[in-house]
Image 1 (spheres, one colour):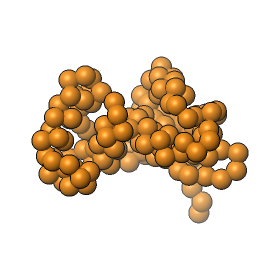
Image 2: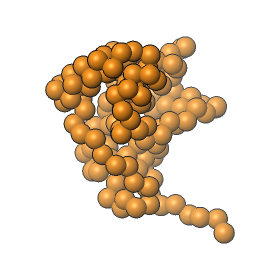
Image 3: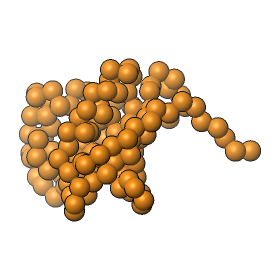
Length: 141
């Protein structure tokens, strides 16, 4: 996968129902480029389906974790592009302090979570990570 594939996947993650014409417009390429890339990503197993996303509180069967990420050198843009193409990363935040980025990660099982964490750790430009599993949320009155 190249940078364009990651940008296309980021667009699809934001709106899997976006039309080929809209995706082509957003990415500045021809519709046939989008169609060909999507077909290649589907055939290679990178895209395994298109789905509806539900609010987190409606899905009790997902494991959520918070992954703090340190980026090496000036590779933030490349790392962010890769993370936006990672299906297990549902949100990504720029932070200050010890960690450069905070990723919200979701998976259906602990094995699935381990796979997501492993893929993220293998991204070139990531120097260190620390992950905490989300147990419960409390609302302020």
